Image 1 (cartoon, rainbow, N blue to C red):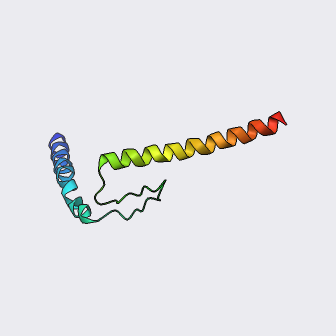
Image 2: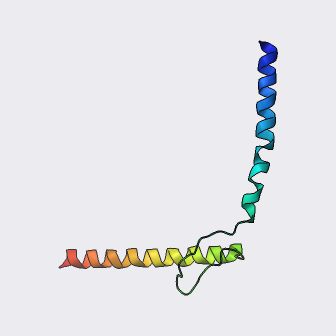
Length: 81
């Protein structure tokens, strides 16, 4: 019984050791994702550097905070009236 368990463990170990090689062909596909243009900044999913992602996220946060600020001002104006 103990030898069968060791053999079974060894088989599972080898199976999971070589499992990632079966998914190596998935790396050849290009991402099928298109980011929306924000403040004139658009991203290319193939050749985008880290700096472009940071600039895009910063621009997105500026837009979201601006919308939040506008909503807060409208709410405060309504409460003031």
